Image (cartoon, helix red, strand yellow):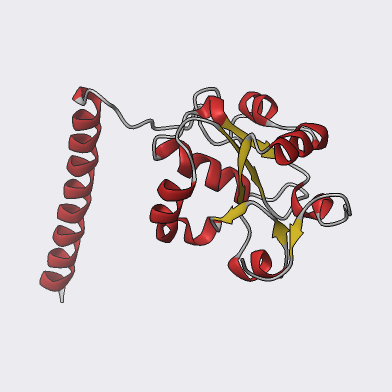
Length: 171
């Protein structure tokens, strides 16, 4: 019995030492990498508007600006809601890139969204996270932050308006 306890204690100690050594090696490896991984998210450098209040303020677009871009055709629109919500109703020119399935929409994204030009993202509204997720996804895939805008009130506000071109059902 005593031998079993000693063996369990020794195995536990070995696991602990291996864990500490692994963490130490990971920290050293990260320290010497040219593109280090951040230990903590720096809100000032984050490309997620949900994490970076300055960026969120910078990319927010008003209803008047959205309406102007929509009527003049000077922007592409991304609906970040779920496919079934998009299918119910969406802005006439919007493409659907659902935040929860964004990786499956890479082909659509690169085919339909210009790398250069204004892209306006909207989601459900009322502080939804979907627009932030899609915004960061676009930036991570080469779309310049300067070209991306977000309509924060989202579909909650857009769906109430009767002077915008809205499509009911899928295109």
